[in-house]
Length: 295
Image (cartoon, rainbow, N blue to C red; front, top):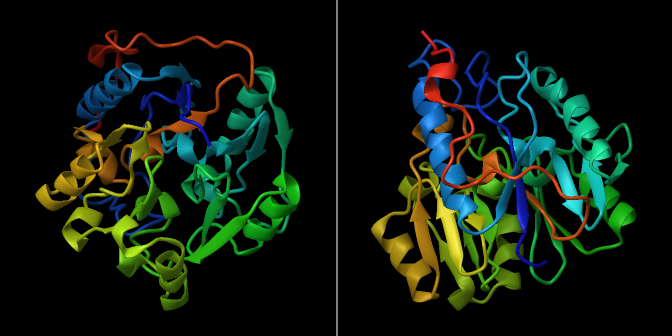
């Protein structure tokens, strides 16, 4: 799949850790600094805006995690396959994302009612047109076959076994330049064997647990440029040796909810729908003083 010409994002207007649906989320812990979260999000917008167009979906006051647009669904050509979230706390997002994609000309689809599917958090497309599908923490195994049926593409299912890495994009990134960045400890032995069979040793970049827990695999891949929260010296060096420019953007506030760069972005392929309002990379969408600050 070609580099996205556009990405969909959602301002963190109402972002907070109000509940716990993964081990990162600690409602009684250090609170989200929403002003700082906004600054970090604007920094990501400006970085991405140097390479792609950034469009917005409006934040909703009762949806604290809606800024993680990767989980909205999967865009494949002109088709939008909406998510069906595992947890009640996020199911309210579904209608808002469905409405946005319907209003912008996409062919909106749903997987069968008994399938849990958390969008591009668990369904990652590579340059050969296949989809790598994470299951076992959020999305169900049935999502893999449902995507095969809906899109007529190869889908490789990978079982996630570490609750910290609850979506595939938190521990696995197939690079457009070739190869893969991944954290081996996130996968079942069988799925790890699948990764190692599909990628030659020279193509595999296995990250340390320290990098993994900084969500270094949660990469926005823009062909020759990658954007992520943090890369350790070894990971940064290995990416650079592949000819990739590495942009690190501090997203520490969002890691309190278990997300980073890729979680905050939904790629939209070029030419799939009418033009949308874009964000100029040098102009923050929302000023910090317009945001309430968590206490």
